Image (cartoon, rainbow, N blue to C red; front, side, top):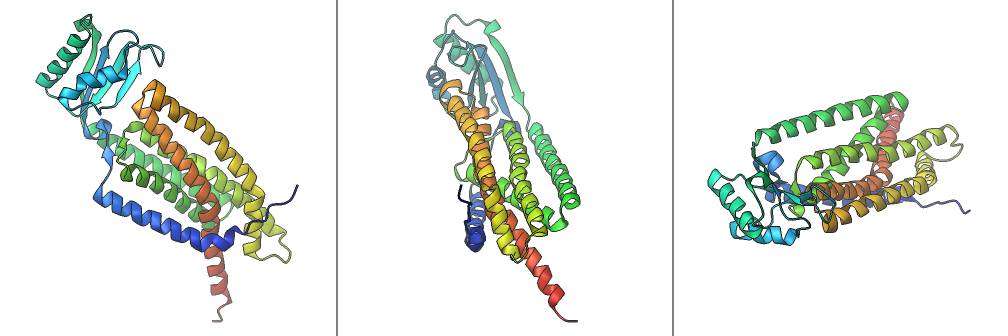
Length: 306
């Protein structure tokens, strides 16, 4: 089998420019569009109703349309993905009068509904969103500190910084996509971001490990050539791992989008798709070139005469 020898490092400048453009687009989008926070963050109303067996989601949206809630996230529960008899509806916060009108509309559409079929009607306060946000940032800080410590002990501090910056790049790309397309964000998004960080660091560590080993036996090769060889040696494993995971996650996204109807889980799957692609890209084109820049910068400083 012919050995891969693609000159990845020759394209590091182009990769940095592309990343800079994406970051710029993301900053503009966040300033203009912001994030489309769901009711887990902003507060709202949750309606859990038992309807007829095998009801259609389009029927639920038709009932909600007069209240301008046809775009509310829906989730079928209480049975199989296609024939469950219960639905969970998440809306902006509704007062008592609006909730009664909506429930009456469902009872008109499904006359067999009884008061016992109204399983849950709750208002979720925005304070939950503040707690979730605080816990998310705390989890990210703990994860980042643990990664820096581990990578520094196993490799060196420059490797740790390059890896953390690559992870921030991945998380920011996910935020950019969700901001650009105004996709609603709820609590599963936090789990997706943490999953992406844990997944993305794996490819980066694999490549860094190859760089470290190859540096010991580099002979006449330059550091740049060692990095290129290390990425090529790890490329098949990284891409195969990412593609295998993507097949599963894309299948989940299609299932949640067209069959199951779980809005939150669809968002979770979409975030994973974007994060896996961004993580594979950053492990190859961002993390290693960043480490190389710091390595060559330090070498130049050491060569400068006092």
